[in-house]
Image (cartoon, one colour):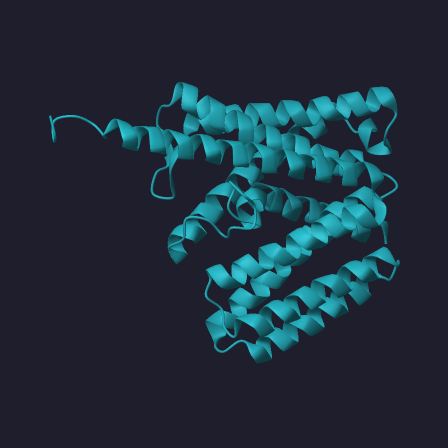
Length: 290
């Protein structure tokens, strides 16, 4: 009888078909991205750098669009050109000071192009965020004392945290973590993700130590576990921060560049936060060695 039950069978079937199609898209695009990133990690050099440069350019474009910056095209063009210049400088071996000058010059241009004070701040944040994505993973990969283990550790922590937090939260439920920001996230999921990220980071370093892959694998496992836990917390914080930003700007996804996943920002929110942490480590390490 109409009005006494749930959706009509046809509507249910259509919803299920759409859900299945969405899941397949997510699975296929996720697999393609994972294969490309891992292959780039193994090869290193320019292929790895180009992957992160493309991700950074797309993510900054999404940021500019999501935060409604204008004039959009000039801001995207200046930011993209600065990121390309910074990555090329890094690949050809110029000094960090030169890279900083490239980014600072672009920042001055953005200050002129953006139309008001709030827009200038958002434009500079986009440039800075893009620089972190474009430069930090490759800087870690190129460091002779760290090598392939560094970015692999980042992937292990972020991916394990994300997957196990989702599964644990769905299975156990319980009190919400930050319901006003992300209604589906729970404390059980956060703690499960923290445990998984910590174990994955420490486990990867133990495997690297056994294989002699990197000098970084000689670090104390206690220190590695603490760093992995901190990175897992950063990853989840990045996820929550992006959820808050999307609520602030009234969007469901940062973009539509990845089928089934939304935008690049949606996929790199946790990774970006860990990259910021790693970037601070690299800067402090360089300063200590100077």
